Length: 98
Image (cartoon, rainbow, N blue to C red; front, side, top):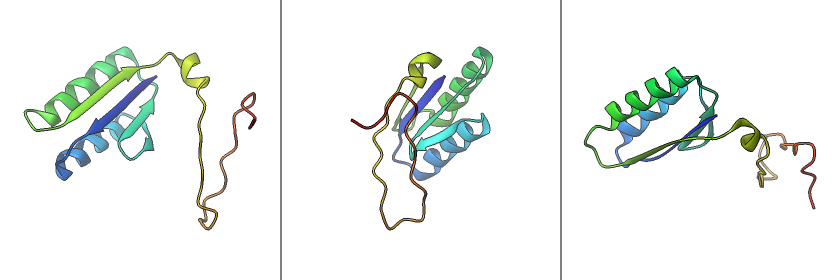
């Protein structure tokens, strides 16, 4: 698993980073956070593309690798707006609410 997290003040650059993550098939899990499975070659290509996009501009991009079993063991706390039309997210087996 790869996780990309960024904080970039320039709107255009931020959009290009998001587009690059989507182009590599990553899933957006927060506004500036993407995750997904990539081969070693694709991880390297993504890193180089992000490095090129940011260039010398102000901003920060963190690309981190997470073992898939660690990712699958994550816990999520999600509170949805009760008035929203989005269906409630279910918990993973073994992580019942306490």
